[in-house]
Length: 427
Ligand code: CMC
Image (cartoon, rainbow, N blue to C red; front, side, top):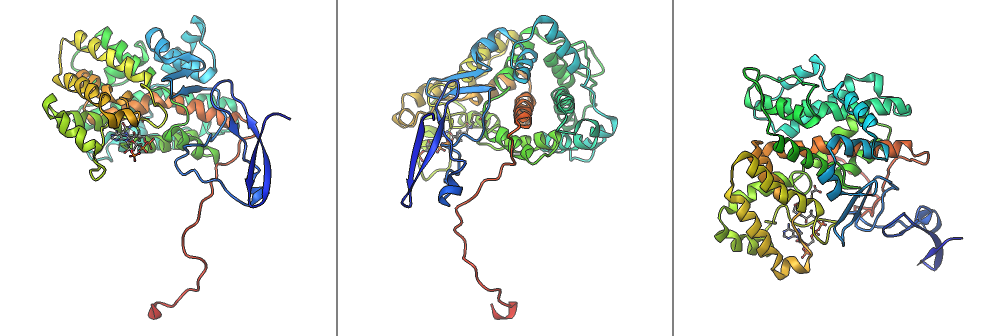
C-alpha cells in the first residue's frame, strides 16, 4: 500500500490514499470519505481541491512556472506558433513539420460559417458586447453540426474540436465588424491562422489588407500565452458542463460565459480601463491607496492571481511584446509608462509584497491590443478565441477518461430546516 493520509473525525479514523502526480503537490484521495464518515469536505473556491487528473498544463505558482505538456511557456512563446501549440495541447507532443502542415491545413478548411449562422448577428443590437454575441453564436453552433456531437465517438470529438478552433476567429471578427457596421470579411485560407483573423477583423473589401509581420507575430504570441491555463474558472466550467454529456459547442459557450467576468478574462478590459482612469503617473499613489483600502471595492486590475504567488511568466513575455509592437507600428502610448510605474510602485509597497500580488497576463495585454487597434470590448473575445484550444483539449481529456463521472459537488446547507407550508392568508 502506498502512502496514506489519516483523517480522524467523529471518533473514526479513515485511511486515504495519497496520489502522486509527475510533479507538483500530492493529493489526498477523499472519494470514499463521505461513504465512510457521512461528512463532506468544504472548499467553496477550490483553494485546496484538485478537481481532476490532467496531463496538459502544469503551473507552479510559487516559482512562476507554466508548462504545456512539459514545455515552458517562455520557450513556446519565443519559438513556436499558435497552431503548433494547439497541436501540442490536443495531441500531447510537438508535431513534425508534416503533421503541423496537415493540422494547419485541416483547421484552415473549417474557417467558414454557415450562412444561416451569419443571420444570427443581425438579431443583436449593434452596441451589443461582443462577448454576448460570442456566447450566443458559439452556443448556436450545436444546432448546425449534428454530425459531430456524438461525444462518445473520438472522431466526432476531433472534428468538433477542429471546427471550434477554426471558426472562433471568424465568429470573433464578425462580432467586431457587426459592432462597427462594416460588412463581414470572408476567411482567406492562404493566410496564417492569426493573419487570417487580423484580415477578417481589420480588412475591408474595398482595399487590400496589409499586415505588419511583427504585429502578426505579436498577436500569435498573445494567442499562445492564452492557450491554456490548467483548471481555471472557465476551463472548470467547460469540464463541469461537459461532464453531463453536453455537446462541445454548448460546453465552450458555457466557458465563454464564465470567462467574461472581470475576475477572469474580463480583467484585460478592466485593466486598460483602470490605466486610462489613472492617466498620469502622479495619480498612481492615490489608486494604490484605494486598492489597499478594505472599505473601497477598487482593486488593481491585472494584479494578483489565485495560483501565481511569484511573477506570472506570461506577464514577462507580454511586457517585452509591448515594445516590439510599438516599434513595429511606430506608436507610443503614455499608458505604458503609467503601467510600468504602477508595477514598480505596487511591487515596492508592503501590502502587495505581503499578499504576493504581481502583474498577471492581463496587465500589459490591453496596452498591446489597444495599440494594434482593438477596442477594449474585444479584449476578452481574443482571450476566448485563444483559450478555445485549451477548453477543447481539456474537455477531450475528460471525456476520454473511462472513469469520468458527472461533476456533482455537495454543499453545507444553512437554510431553514423542514417546516410546513402556510396558506397565503395566514402569513
Ligand atoms: N488589488 C488589491 N488587492 C488585491 C488584489 C488586487 N488586484 N488581488 C487580491 N487582493 C487582495 C485581496 O483583497 C485579499 O486581501 P485580504 O487577504 O486582506 O482579504 C488578498 O489580496 C487575496 O485576494 P483574494 O481575492 O482572496 O485572492 P483570489 O485568489 O481569490 O483572487 C484574483 C485572485 C485574480 C481574482 C484577484 O487577485 C483579483 O481580483 N485580481 C484582479 C482581477 C484580475 O486581474 N484578474 C485576472 C486574473 S489572471 C487572468 C485570468 O485567469 O483570467
